[in-house]
Image (cartoon, rainbow, N blue to C red; front, side):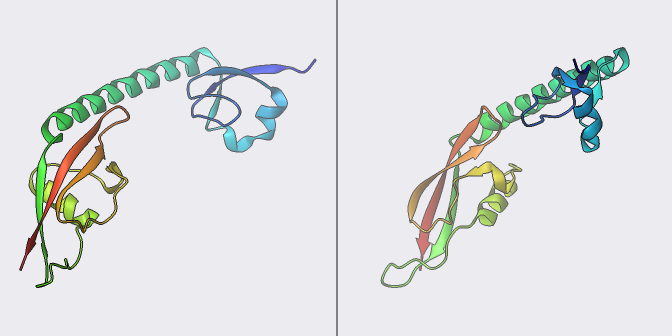
Length: 152
C-alpha cells in the first residue's frame, strides 16, 4: 500500500480540492508536482496555524469588501446619469456612449468603478433611458439609468 501525506491546499486546485481544505495525497503526487509546492503545504501544526490565521484574515477582508459594496449599492442603485449626443436634422445620432464615458461621469459624481464591473455593456446609441447593471460584489448587482439626450 502506498504512503499518503496530509496536505493543506493554499489555493483551489482542479481535480484536487478547494482552498484551505485538508486532503490526503500520495507521496508520489506530492513529489512529482514540484510546481504545486507553493499551493500545497504539508499538514503540520505550524502550517495549520498559518492556514487558520490566513483564513481569518481573508474572511475579515471579505466582510469589509461586502460592507463597502453594500454602502456603494445604497448610494448608486437607481441613480441616473445623463449624456448628450449630437444629431443631424434627420434625427440621426452621431457617436455613442462608451464605457469610458460612463466611468468618467460616475467618477465625477464620486463613484469609483472598474470596467469589468459593468455587466453586458455595449456602446449606447439609443436616445432616452437605458438600464445598466453594475456588479458590486458576488451578491450585489446595482442598476442605474443612463439617459441619452440629443442635441443639435
